[in-house]
Length: 119
Image 1: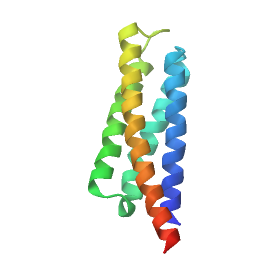
Image 2 (image 1 turned 45 degrees about the vertical axis):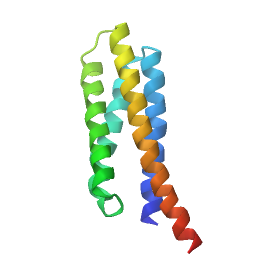
Image 3 (image 1 turned 30 degrees about the vertical axis):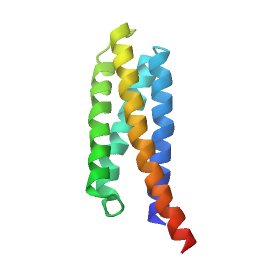
Image 4 (image 1 turned 180 degrees about the vertical axis):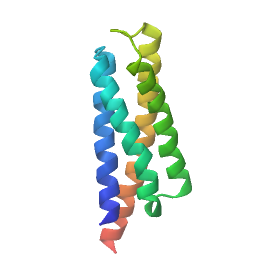
């Protein structure tokens, strides 16, 4: 049951990350800043709350993703009305990298759930 909860939390984080990416692309700075902060909060908690279900590598990946999103949040919180082309490109690249990491970890956890269901 706890693995399912971890999977659910990462699935929601992936959905929020999709929204963050969309907000960045559309220069919706306040919404992007809020979504980035929500993701930072979730990724700050999950590795510690669910550490029994995440090996050290996965915990490290999630904390690294949190750090990257925290940089986006800080930049967005102090940003003007629009992002420069370079800022937008950097934020999009970070979001895509974090998305890859989150989805990899989500896939691993779902695989563990599937293996457990077959036993």
